[in-house]
Image 1 (cartoon, rainbow, N blue to C red):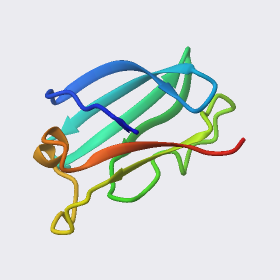
Image 2 (image 1 turned 135 degrees about the vertical axis):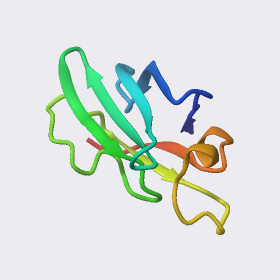
Image 3 (image 1 turned 90 degrees about the horizontal axis):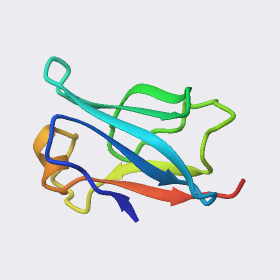
Image 4 (image 1 turned 45 degrees about the vertical axis):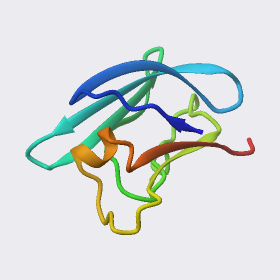
Length: 105
C-alpha cells in the first residue's frame, strides 16, 4: 500500500510502518528553493531520517541506521513513464505515490 499524501506544503501525521504496528511521526515539507519534498521520520525522540529528499524509485530508509527503524522500505514511484522527477504537483495529485513495503527483519 502507499502513504496517503495531504494537499499541503507542510504536514505531519502519525503513521504505522513495518509489520510491528509501531507508530511513527511522519513530517513532509516542500522546499521551494530545492524544489523537493523533504521527509523526516521520528519515533518518540529517536530520529529515523531527517530532511531526506524524495527521489523516484529510491528507498527513503536506505541511509537510516536507528535501532527503531521499521522493517520496511518507503519508495516513491509512478506508473507514468513520463514523470522523470518528483515535484510538488505530481505528489499532491498522486501521480507519484510513496509505497510502504514491509521487509523481513
